[in-house]
Length: 390
Image (cartoon, rainbow, N blue to C red; front, side, top):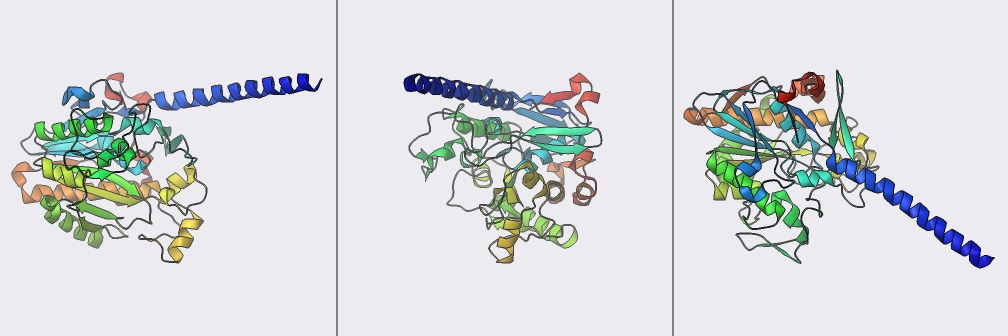
């Protein structure tokens, strides 16, 4: 009798495990295949694929959309990169707002919303990340996948014992071979993310991009926060933007940092070294990433409010201020947009013949007052030909 009961317990345990595995598998598949619509704003003249610039990435999960906003008037070209790290949502949301609102008046603007699409299909193991986050609008919610810092191991495997960066030979942590901001300028015969950054470098070279901007967020425990990180070719532009924004527009100042010459693989270093473009990276504060945080949920992700992070700030353990207002997503998106517009303006003033100018985009105060969702269009109301999926 005891043996019968034992066997029954085993059978029920296996059945329960199979049920749980099935539900988990369905949830995983739904998250991985979730489609994020993008409405092509009035300034978008065409959408191409990253693989058009380098066949080695074509038809892979990282063969992302490249949105082209061409004024049709002589000028230069700029590239904006969102989604380098999909656990930093203001980056892809800022790029999304640009695609859905910006109208170029000189030169060309290239926008990538999801640079590392693979990393948006997986969340951080053991961190209890939410699978999705939602941006409220007047017509409903826009839903986005939450992701991780690194590409999904399903798409890039196996990791090396030690990642040796190409072409510097610098040794980095093994998982950094899946980190888009450790794999610049890329390697044509490398693993997935190395090929992705190579394709982006080819875009910069073939389109004669003069300015490349990489959007990011970071924990408040990180010293390079509320900062424009600039390659030496972009230092004058970045310094002027920092002073202008801090004096005239942003309540919390934005600093300018020099790109370290000895740290390889990062966009602000390698784009400037290996292409003709100036390269800058923007960092905004995201309390969701701090190690001292409390519950890791969508509320923290979007509001940036956390009593534990506030307590760390009260003890002067952070590099950015935080109070009961937190760091809401609208503040973070607004900072990125105004920083980009200011950098573009100064860049264009310095070399009018190579200028890249846009209009129709909200600035910091507009995004904070009205919310990011006020500048996102309803995909269900747009013609099918004016909707793309990232």
